[in-house]
Image (cartoon, rainbow, N blue to C red; front, side, top):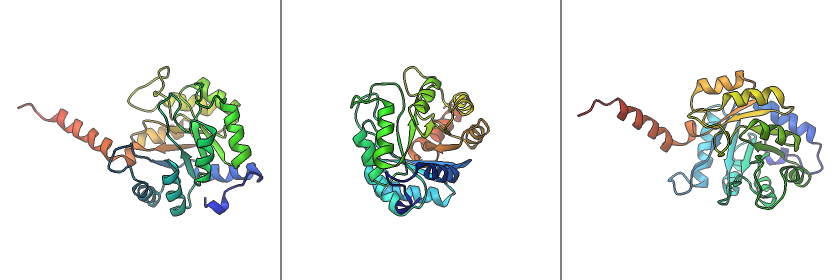
Length: 245
């Protein structure tokens, strides 16, 4: 969705919600991010990765950092989920309202933020943060959660979408090598808002199963856009299969 097509603070949110959700329903969203210090940690590189994902059929892009978002927004006419990873606290995904406003200003259609119950650095509640994003930017909010209870609370707080992004990445959530598809299924069944399956989705089978479990859409990141991890998977498997000697 182009910047000109994005809703302003005074626009009716219902139409924006419906248009964005329809655009990604039953489809793949590709997360284009690189870690600090990596060769691909460059806004232009991430923009090119996003363009490559779009050429392959991605229905939307998820990206982090204002500069990456601005580059991708200028290059692509797809729904853009934006976030800003900042700080060393437990809550570092778009941790404050100021971060959220900057993400919106950089061109994100949907502002993704930490939707857990952990204290936020600016002292605001999740509900206060969601309300501020809605009122001051007109953008939608995706709450990244790690448990069922957090998903319910995020929907109650006004989040437009709930993602399983943090499942297995908080000390109290269930981890594992693959996605928490049971969580995807429970939240999809019980929440009044769409659920986005995200987190450790490494195969096409896992992505398809997430849709079968009720996910509105699936975010895939590492398995598509992080060659360091993908190479590591193959190198480890080949090394394990190599006979000794």
